[in-house]
Image (cartoon, rainbow, N blue to C red; front, side, top):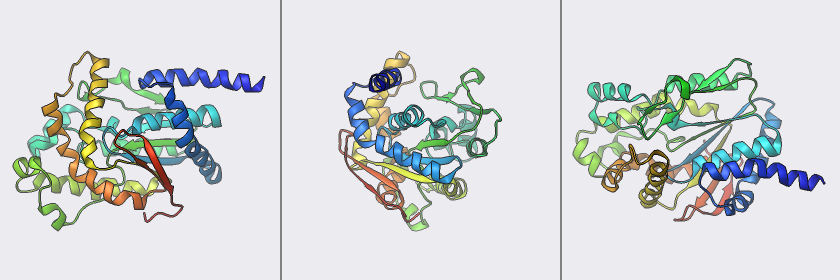
Length: 305
């Protein structure tokens, strides 16, 4: 009887999960193989810490980190009885008006969301501090609408109340560190060569990485990386992501193929850096193939953080 009840209970959260992400039910067996053990590890880490733990998940655009993050959230809640809050770095983008002002004052490329410098880092820090503080105060979680390219208004904000056991934070540039002047000198693509010939934009992005992102990493208890085979996969993966967004928003605010080709160049420098460096600085690394399927993983108890 208990096994039947367990199967029924699983079905209650599995079906909505699959529908949210437009996934076939085969994904559940895949996730059970690769990511359910990670839930067990997170549960063990949280039990030993006896405090809320922060799990950072890095993955390039389109790698599936949002789906994995949501699976971990639901599995930790339903299978392990933990209170979990899932955050995306994307939800902490500056508003469109704020980015337009930044573009006017600093550099025109900063009107495009994505790189460090286009996030509201004080809001992210205060949100994390409130969630990890073990208080009963209500915490507002912002949500960003990519189809509108703007933060959702007040009615779109999620409110979390009560103690939290685990905070999951996913983001494409989490874990990235600042580069040297020599590394910044040469452009990595046409966008940098043509739109940032003097390097002002990429140096500003680098300064924000050093000043705002790196200090945040001290809060992280476990690092997880979904490692793409190379940056070359990003375009196709991001194109599939845009097609999903289009189906949900009637095509409004969705990028064309040429717009997307330019857009991913904003992310290239830091993505290549993450692919080269983060495997050695992460506790759990999942190697993906070109179809975003895990082909292997590695665990390091004491990565070179």
